[in-house]
Structures are given as structure tokens and as C-alpha cells.
Amino acid sequence: MAAITAVLYREGKIRFTNLIWMFFDLFYPLIYFLLFGVMMNYTFGSPLATLGVDYTSFFLAGVLGMAGFGIATNTAWGFFSDRDNGIFYEMLTYPMSRAQFLVGKVLFNVLLAVLQAVITVGLGALWLRVPVRLELLPLLLAGVVVGMVGWFFFFAIFALRMRRNDAFNTVVNLFYFVFLFASSVFYPLELLPAWFRTAARLNPLTWHVDLLRFSSIGLGDPLHILVEAAAFVVFSLAAFAYGVRCLQRQE
Image (cartoon, rainbow, N blue to C red; front, side, top):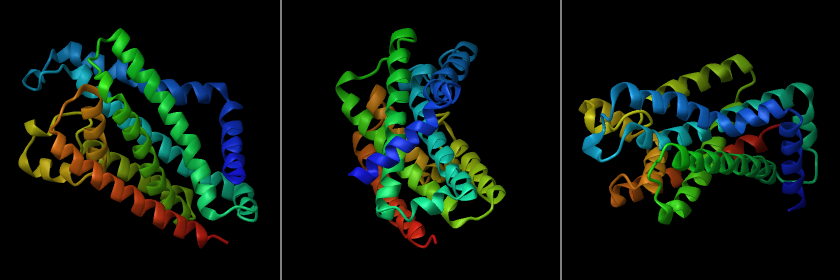
């Protein structure tokens, strides 16, 4: 436990030395929610009336999913800076297991993701009247945590396997584009062509966002959400197992 606490302390020191960075980490989902979600709803009215919600409420889960996705990519990129200055290899010599090293990193980012979600959901409900389902908030918290863990380990695999920063950024941007737009982040899949729905249903980001949408505003079929949640847990466990294996190969 002391080893994990040490990693948590280091991650916190890195973040809190730059208050602007910390502010951006905590509030950018809310800013994006306000600029994109509200403006889309204002411009086009309520195109999701058939679902019983306006676009602002629908987009809340998308913002939370994007936030976890963004934290994961930024933290995974940190492996490159640690590797360049030698800290990464020094930490591998410390009295901690490789799994503890990864768990310490992911725990800090889980805390960050939870704070983001509290701010975004809380102010969204107060300012924008998003009909958040209070009885489902524990499930929403679990969705934020599991999503953060899954995406962190997924991108850590590429950060640990690749040696070139530009190659990593290329892969991340490709995944960001494909995962983000071929998903249910911005639009309900029921209104889209069949081929697009099929691709989106195979997208782990869709599984994550659908769970967040159900646990925030109650939108979605519970049985379908349960299947997607189970699939995302399997995805996260597989990413963790392979991420630890990649770290064990680092010398």
C-alpha cells in the first residue's frame, strides 16, 4: 500500500504544481458541455424529443465519456516524458511491483475523473436543469471509475510498447477520431444508418457512454446496458492484464 501511496503522491505533486493545468483538468468537461451541448440545443431545438430528453441532457454522458478518455490519453503520454528524463526507469527499480506502479497511476486519475464528474453533473443539474436520476448516482460513479480504469490501461499499452512519441500521438489521434465519432457520444444510434449502428455497437466507448447515459438520466434499456457494461469490464480487465505484461518487459 505504501508503494501505491507514493505513486499517488508523485502524481498529485505533478498536477498541483500547475494550477492552470489542474483547473483545465477539472473544468474543461463542464466548459465543453456548456459550449457544445447548450449551443446545439439552442440552435436546433430538441431533436431528441422522441427519446423524451433534450440534447443538453443527452450530451451529459457524452461529455463524461470524453473526459475519461482524455485523462487516460494524457496520463499515458506521461510515460514518454518520464522515459525521456530517466524517471521511468528509476521508478522500476523501486521496491514496488509493476502492477502497483500502474494501479497508483490509475487511482490518481480515478480521483480526478470523479471530481470532474461531480462538478459537471452537479452544475449541469443546477444550471441547466438536467434531470439527473439521484437513485442511479452510485451506478454513475461506478461507470466513471470503471471507464477511467479501462481507458487508462488501454492507452498505457501503446505508450509502453512504442518508443516514438510521434507514433504514439498518431495512434491516439486515430483512436480518438474513430472511437469518438463512431459512437453514441454525440447522437442517438437509433437515428443513424444500419451500418453505422453496427460499427458503433462494437465500439467500447459506446458501451461506456451508454452506461453513463442510463445512470445519469435513465435513458436506455436496462438489459442492453447490462450486457454493454459486462463487455466493458472484460475490455478493462484484458487491458489491465496486457498493460502489466508490457510494463514487466520494460528494462
